[in-house]
Amino acid sequence: MQIAAHDRSGRMSALEFRSFQARRPDHERWELIGGVAMMMTPPTIAHNQIASNLERLLNDALARHAPAWLAAQRPGLDLGAGDFRPEPDVGVIDADYDPGQRFVDKAYLLAEVISDTDEVIVPGTDRRWIDVKRELYREHPHCLAVLVIAQDRMHVALDVRSESGWTSITCDAQGELSLPSFGLMCRVTDLYERTPVSRN
Image (cartoon, rainbow, N blue to C red; front, side, top):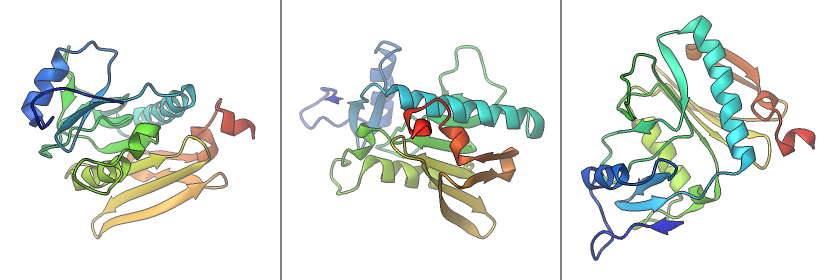
């Protein structure tokens, strides 16, 4: 992980971060974590495969159930959350977007495949980045579901919003993933197709 040099404190505003990000090569992946710009480590092949599996499963379901939405990997997300600009691994966003558009301010599902960088402690706190991201996603007013997916074992933490608030469950290799708002019902094992854990 690398930290961007900015001022003596190393802190950036969200606007400064987006300006900095616009000058970086497209292949670099940066997130603003507590006002500090951090380059994410390159994801593993397994991480990418899980994200691809989820994106495909969601898009197949959305094509039938909610064609006004689409699943996309690494959508640029502006949550209006001050010192934080996370970049989810998969998000369900509006299918109507402009050519060249990089960022959205509305997402209906947000998913993270846990990587080493997610274990980083957020500057000024004692909390892991993955825990802060999960909270930020749940605070987003348009978000209906949050998934946090392990890549070293079959384990999914799912948060679903209803009129009465958020419900959280965990699923393992014997479980099923049910997301009625997105038309998706699949086995947890479907997320791990063609990954090393699927061969264990």
